[in-house]
Length: 229
Image 1 (cartoon, rainbow, N blue to C red):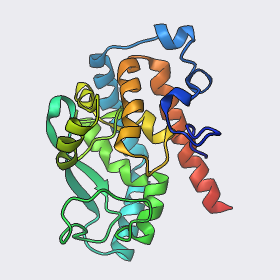
Image 2: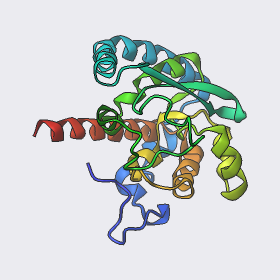
Image 3: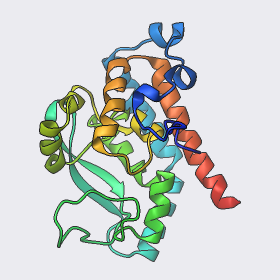
């Protein structure tokens, strides 16, 4: 699946993105079919339990593959910043070599990062590395949809240098988000914040959240079809 937001001009500016075509933002359902945050939290906790049961065979397979091909720890935990600036531990399947930042300190992952293993690239491209974050949803630290959580080392910098970045504190971070389906992997924080803020302003729309989830699923299915072919 190609990146939704890449226009003919190559611009990643949200002003050039056709929101009406992809997300029906001018429709009655988008504007009027809304839900409150308490109801969302209750639904997400129940749905997280359902998905953990549903995906348990896949998660066990991924864990075994990591252990056999990479050795070391299966899960990776890292401190991230959530709603209202609260810090929490995010969980992922490990995709990098162990102690990847032992010599460099906190460094953002790049598109062709040499620290990412061969299996890790597959897990990242398919988003299977994110499955353990269902536990974060269950604990209430994350939502299914929202701005992706960032590390405190970078948040401190971005909130000073990037306009409106502090608005990300208004919502729980998500497993997937508008920026993740609309932008390429190596998009900058300045490019992503446009999409994060747009989502924050429209987050109560049920249709919006469903469509972001739908495009995320399509992206995953397309990846696996590419592998098969």
